Length: 125
Image 1 (spheres, rainbow, N blue to C red):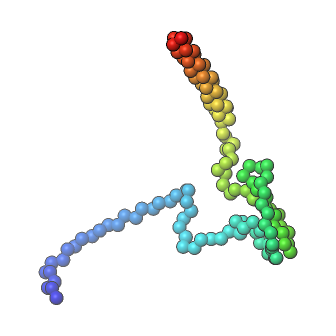
Image 2: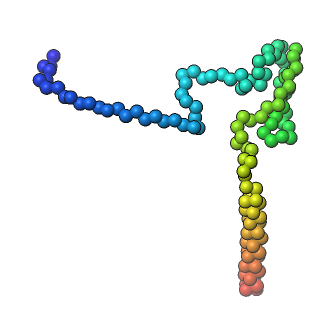
Image 3: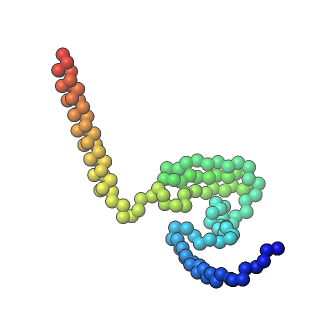
């Protein structure tokens, strides 16, 4: 066994806690909560289900679900997030102007290429 040193180091470490709060992510929880709204059937007990049919609808990001068997259940399923929906303050005029500008640029570039090809054909003949 090694002898103990005759002096002690008096080191005090201050630990700085960083409080990180995110508006994007929920706070950490050891358990994952289950929300009944994530179930298509909510609180209904469906019995004897045999077939599941899904088909698209004409609505954006929406599909229909039909389950048959002893019970018949129908639901319209949509995405939870608004990733494919435009905000109310979306500037549609900016989008239309950008697309129109790209079409004008396309026609200008097309006429430039055609005139350059016509000059090359004229000079080579």
